[in-house]
Image (tube, rainbow, N blue to C red; front, side, top):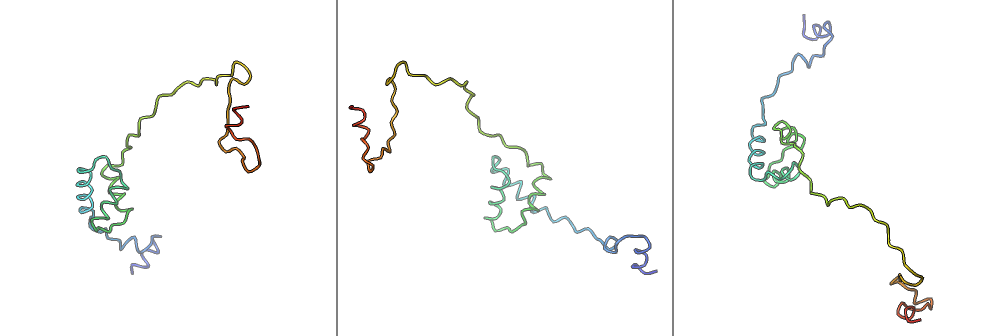
Length: 122
């Protein structure tokens, strides 16, 4: 019985029967990643991948990411420390009329309005 007919009878695709696993070609990727992580432990995948490209190695980023994850290097980096939370306080109100002024620095001089200095003198 031919391979084609046997696969058809079993209900599988012929490419499954002929499949041969390729030898592991990731040893060089692993070596370079481990070297870079040893030198630059604070850098993440993106920066390490740029360093790999600068060395002239043209590996697919998906392949490098797969190896990066297999080495368990895809741990979360610690973020920046945030400022402590400050409770909100209400704005202070003026004690009397005209006790607090606010002026815009873009007063319409072309319209003929008085300038800020003239506004404060009156």
